[in-house]
Length: 258
Length: 288
Image (cartoon, rainbow over all chains, first blue to last red; front, side):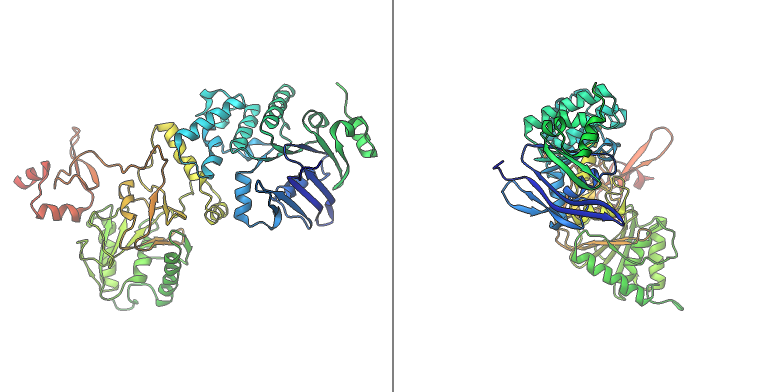
């Protein structure tokens, strides 16, 4: 690709005591692209996500982010206020457990509006309208806008979290097992929703999942991790249909074909 | 008073509090920690305010103490007497005569001057405390001026009640930087804090925090463009002095639904009555 990357990790390394969480990891993400990071649990997927999003500092290596004005930023050298601003405007984070991100004592509308208000929106009517619009986009009924999230089902909570994250039109969203813990039919609907929203809004996504099927359905490119290293990377179909690394072959063959 | 230092506190403590006050004045609205002392007064009765007052009081000062606007309630009377005995300063109930005013939950109706200091008693200095339980996190939010959460609270109020329903301790933005709790004064008093000529000091004894608003500082009550801040007051004139522009207390007078609205600022009300203003119920009282 000739287009410059949106996010790049170079030579990332991190150890927790004697455990190697990341070693020599290089990652590139282009605008509008969906990159899946797959691997078994403990392979360093979530650690990599946290390092890329600036939430966890690596021992070695650097993460570059290109802002809309084409300036490169070293994510881990950014001052805290700038990183915070980035996290609540240009970036988004979707957790596996929506309760980690949502405010359970605040209504659905307030949850969606928070990022707007944090950015300085001070017009109640506009915030309300944006909240209604986003609830509709994630297929939550408008009549639920003033309900508390605790009255929502698991799938609705996850969709609410997505609305809350996307309301500021981020360019880059980090997703940590967004469909984990949901039953299969709800998962399918949610994947469909994520795919259509991300494609329409041209959002770049780093998606962490242990579920090969989710990666196949959503991702353009895939990176397979084992013991803190990326062992294979490439186009999703290429990697999954013709795996080269023994570990990837094992991973792909261990999935039951439905 | 024999056996006690001037104004009760020892000089070391006063110096420590004054250092805190200087920091607080230098960063308007920022909460400065201080080593709060045990005072001969229970927490919640103004231990923070009394320590600030003790630290700034000089021999020539004239002290006024009000509690909910009144000079004659238990809290006000005992704090005034405390300083009359331990510092020997002159005390007064007249707002214009005082150089230091310690207050609980009100700002006097009379405009304060630039040679006066008002000291607020603060139970909870953290404006975000009901919204974010972690102090570590609220400190970070103040540091990064990340105040979206406070507006979420206002949003919730409007979506639930159709208006912002905070009637006291209404959060303010100081000098366009720090979110601050104005202490539990009625929202009615918030506009008085804006560009006030007097120095405003806040002391929270149990929470061990001091903060301040220097004279002539911008203080803005949070609101939305389409739901602007409104000062709420009972829609009546004062029953005793007939004032229509002062904050009113509702007093139940009998068990048949009788009630009386009177100025909460007793000095203001008394002055008006002395000047010949008489409210609907005030005349009756004079006749009895």
